[in-house]
View 1 (tube, protein in one colour):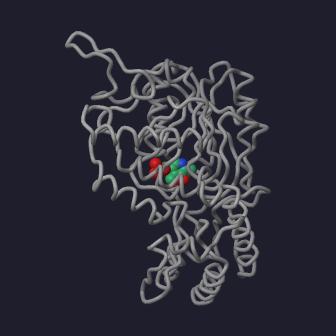
View 2: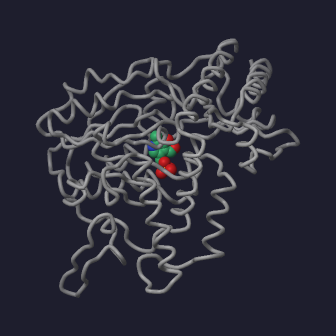
View 3: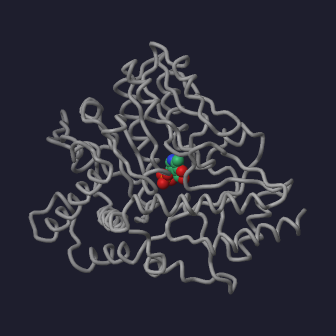
Length: 406
Ligand code: PLP
């Protein structure tokens, strides 16, 4: 089976839109994807049919909401092949998931002089929380570099690891360069030293099959809004052997076992990490997004998007003076480039006026910009609802703007 593109496009109302009286082309999917009607319907259904605060009430509506929220936990477990449903924690997004681990793992396992390794191509979300932890605990952040093609220099990991290394946190796919990292190799190397690994799957899980058991990672994070689901919801997968030893991140309702003014004891996982009323509407919407991905088939998505990416690369190569950032054997989802000396903001602004949405700037990954000594790139990022025709229009527009601004 392959993707039925006209049917798929009809499921996404925003794809039918015009901007500046031009058909709208959305190539900023790495920032956030659009949501299909099925997700919008799921969210509306909650408010119309069974709105209730989950996990607390004895009444019908509360129970209905609880059943639906917990069913999504099962869906996430299946999506990433986690061994146990308690190892899935709902958060507000990838950023919050990383902050949770940095804070809570940090409280339990990081001490003065310890070391944390991240890669040079991380999104700020996978740098800053670790820096904050290092500051708090007087620990040290070490950086695994990439070369000029964007390839992560995994051969240097062994040399970076010391008997003080406590965790490695790395992205599966660079949100700037689209480089797919050899995370299995990273995990194997780290595990030989009993060091856990956190994978940032924010740019992976919507494009490829995910199997945390096969990978062996200790933590994985991702956001709902980048996988056709609602904003304000994300997930953390963590091995129970870690989660059980980590203290809570936020305190409040539902994460407790017993509260007195003398002492509070905490709930079991995953609830220990889910303080307060969860984003139940968004969680249930995320469930509908996962169903949608299943319906299309992640293997079909992968094949279709690879063809799209290959086509975009081949066509962009015909643009005079183009320079790509990220040219490795395995690329996914995004293409970053500059044309001659044209400022990325100028290119982005003109493309916008032609009805084409791309991202320009540092993409929340300033160390990647520093590596190449640039201020920003133009980034086109794709989803299964994009088409070769859209790419053709985009290439013509890039050529037109390049000629104008050269
Ligand atoms: N990690 C990567 C690789 C990303 O691309 C992003 C967002 O662009 C994030 C983390 C943060 O995601 P969010 O802002 O949804 O928490």
